[in-house]
Image (tube, rainbow, N blue to C red; front, side):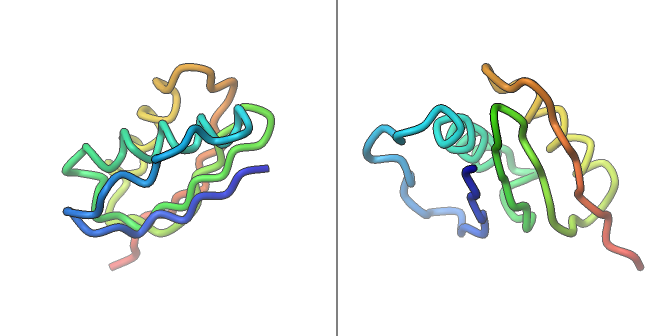
Length: 92
């Protein structure tokens, strides 16, 4: 199981300096870097967990569109077998 909490500022350097050991960790890091590059997702509080190529997204996001975008981005990550989207839009 790989768990990546993701709450990073805009100018934070890349977290990946050395290749992660497991395939799940590699998937989590690729997805994390992809979300960091997206201006709609970079400020959201999304936790990424990967178990046996299944991505689990968890957290509270600003709106349903952000949840959909994060879900689509996870699916578009090469090697992902399934996505469990537990993101909840912020209630206003």
